[in-house]
Image (cartoon, rainbow, N blue to C red; front, side, top):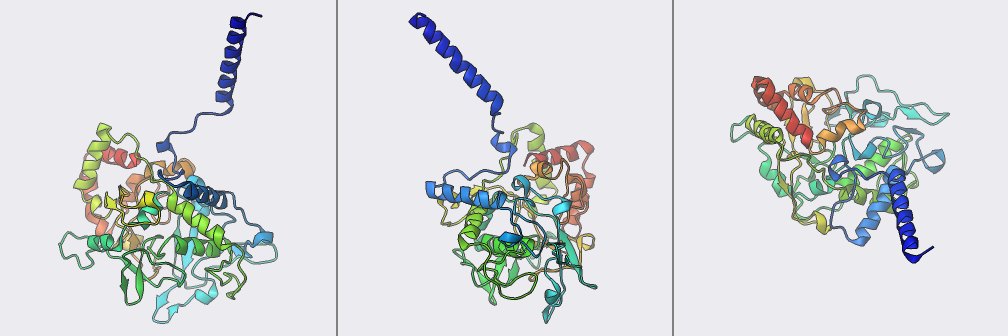
Length: 399
């Protein structure tokens, strides 16, 4: 065979190889089509820790031999947060208790979380009679590091607990008792020994270490040096997960990218956003926040658009479950971030389960269940034309 023929044969072989690879390895999804993935600008060391945390979060399935239970809710982190998205009714948690001057009356009876599954030979927990309780659908995980880096001063500037400006919105922080193992972020404000919570449905967790260590303990029955009391026996126990693994998961959650908006310049999206702001939704779902200092340079001094103020708001009697955490009243809920909302069905079985317990089956349904401080915006939404409502929902679906 001549040299030109050999070159052509070689090129044909390479082309066939590349074509077969495309069939075997499909093209990666677009960045705006998925919630997982690291934030841009990480150092090699940070990226390595992100990958370790990814494995621990999504592939770290516990068994009885590795510390699961004996009572628990789930066997892994990822089972409640598929693709780092929102959870489903089958993974919804039950929180219970009733706080008064003596503290949580049901803490010694399994509170604050119901572990409804158990290893063989053990009985799952039952909800104590008379316990105020609420169901919490697992939230999406992305963009959490940016929320962590927003200074306390920025949240306090958004707060208006006595509604001084008379707009009907009186957001306030949830001042919580933080565990001793937390490291206060720069600019942390303290009030009577309490810190501003910003994670969880009622903002009852100070930071991602607080949230993660509590989840290991309450969701999976895994003892760590951070949360050293066994959820079943109520006694101190030896750690069943290493500090490094917990910190890797915290780093993974902190370094997940912010959701990427889809078709931000589509006419319906732009018109819908204006309607969203015009009817007052942005007063709680604050469109834009700016981060402060962060040990992760990629998160520091960034302007992001999460659509939350991370504050508590009274949502009216319809969303009052009689359950409270920290200083949050039963009808008060932390404003959930809206970024990533349009991708929620990907992790929720192709449909929506919205609000704190998944009771709303569509975006429109969630809006119409807003009461209290959210009622004026709900009424303005209902007064919009069908086309304007469609555009507003189209905007929310783009987030």
